[in-house]
Length: 412
Image 1: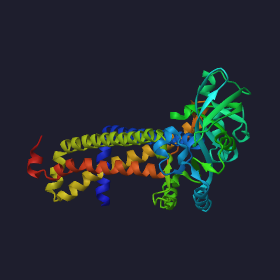
Image 2: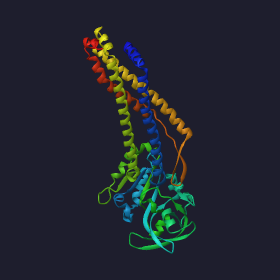
Image 3: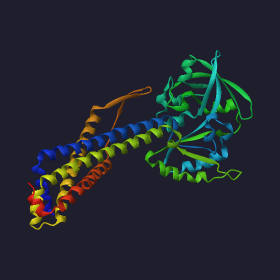
Image 4: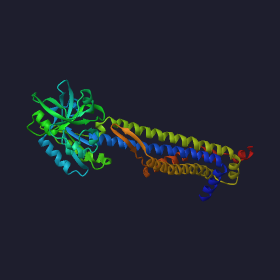
């Protein structure tokens, strides 16, 4: 085997220019894939954190049927006190959960005494909301999220601009409770809140105790429970640990609760899947580059070395040994290109982190991508390149092994 490796290595050096160009092409392909994967992975992680850490959380729990009619914010599908006790008992003992918060949501009429419009209200516990959603405060101007007090409101920017509402202005909220009773309350504008995406553009926030007063609730009710995990990579495990909640039955012997991950709640997950598809497409392009490059080199090598192949075959070299020689040459090209490409990619990624690629998202400026290359990603790409190199070498190697020694020696 050592002799085969030595001979294959010498054969590659004999055509150093072609070998170098092929290796460079494979190296560039590997670099392109790895750097793209690092940048897209960083972008995905950042965007996921923006969605989960500022609005959705990682997991949400609702009463069964709530999400099917969520656009209407139904008050008849709120979680009651007994249901909350069952849920919180499980959440408090769950090892995957870092924190959670309650929300009480409703539709309301918003008026500045001159004009009025509809608004979606979120009743929150300011302290728990800030803990569960650490980026929530970055969407707010005028006040810190944890300092939202009773009698004050965070107005969505869309409504604040349209109705020319400013900080410290007094507004009126009018809502109808489940029994059809209408009630109105005055609120002081504490600040405005920036939307993320979707229907959140008309979402305002008030203290959860104010919602209870506005709806004249006697008992505790909650529309949704928002959960933050200690490690978002453990999302599937956390969802499995909460499965027993879905087995609870109500008085009609039907499921009482429904559990959704952020992936089911956010349209951004479709963008994440598109980025994953693009990753696969880029890898397919890499495979094509490697396949064509190796195939071209090996085919040319066979045609240029017909007499040489005939000579070693006439000397008693077996077809299997000739096949191994050409497969080894293709393998060497693949290994070299994968190794150099991986090393250069790691260096370029470090340079990008030092220089920094900044961008803006909403109110946040000078955000910087922090691409990282995992050893697993580098190894997976390297393995793909090496396997394709071997596959591309099979046809030329078989062709070389099947050459008739007499015919090969006669060729000019």
